[in-house]
Image (cartoon, rainbow, N blue to C red):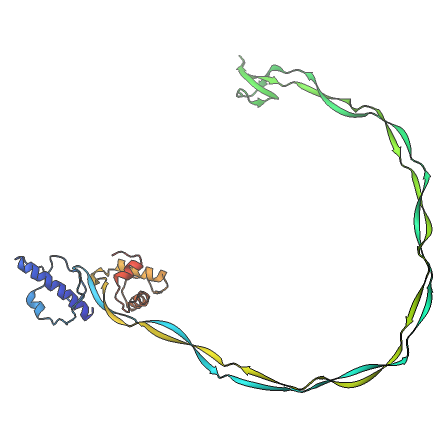
Length: 358
């Protein structure tokens, strides 16, 4: 329990004592450990004389403190944002590059014999074509197509259905299929033997017969003509006379010529920059009063629930034993840093965030 805790509780108890004193009511029994964080019941009060003997700091608690609630002064860490800015890494410069001249070997033709023309006869060009010759002309022919039959199987009754009493070894239910037929009834003879009335189904045999599918008919068929291909040569292109130009006869002479002249290239090399990240404080650190869980609420059931909730969120990896040890308090402090509280005292904001009830 911090000194701020004690100051808050003592202030609240002092106010309650003064109210009860004004009402001429008796004071309740004083708690054994006044430094422990405990809720203040509406009827609870401490001995005023004993409280006057306890030094109280100037900052005794939040101005809007409520009876029955516990408070502690915690640090809200400063909040930073990362800003970026461009810093020149290298200044702008200029590069000068001298590209020397290049040369190439050039081949120049020299005429050895002048060009001339002459007449040339191109002979005719022939090609072979195929002619169709009729060997046998088309004709019509009458054909007789025989009738078509199929075999059909018919079921012919050989014995109709009948009923008869059949000796049996037991009583069969009516309608059951037994003894080769359907049971109609049962009877017991004077000798004690049992007979069952059975209805036997009719019997059939299969008789095959031929059935006409398509009757015989005649049809006239046209038989196409018989032909053959006979090759024949024809003129594809007639002969002609053309003038042929005989080109001049030359020989190549090699010489070296300038391909590209020498030149100077100036290049501007721009400056380079790098990005620098700097943290900037957006909200400074500050001391605030937080509504926390009173020490009297830390029973083993509640501490176990806190340990399970922190374990499920990856902040606590110790045993679920219900003991508020250093490992549990360190896990509470790590979790509450995300809520903006740098303290191991469990705040009511953390209780609500962990879905816990007190």
